[in-house]
Amino acid sequence: MPSLPDELAVSQGEMVRVLSEYDDGWALCANMRGEQGAVPLECLQRQRVNVPGAANPGAGATRSRDDQLAFVPTG
Image 1 (spheres, rainbow, N blue to C red):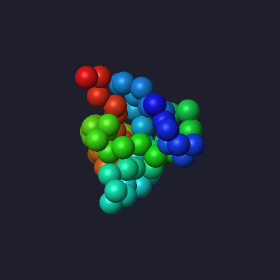
Image 2: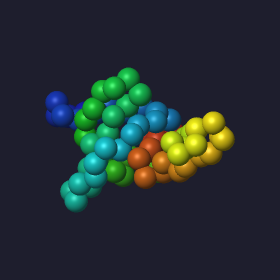
Image 3: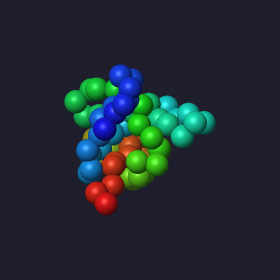
Image 4: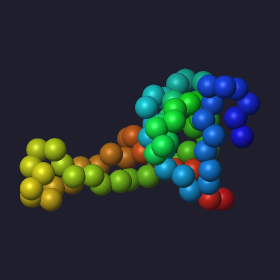
């Protein structure tokens, strides 16, 4: 539960996009509803997600975006 107005409330199992990581153990994240805020890195787990490649979209190529997507573990 956020304690400051710049923190983002996240739920277990929720996917978020990591926009920036900071040396103090926090990350600026955006949820799938477009809301942004700070989340402790210890609350996130990296998730490998393949998305369509931009170079040749018709060929079904994929590229990894595991550097930007994370989810809140369920336990």
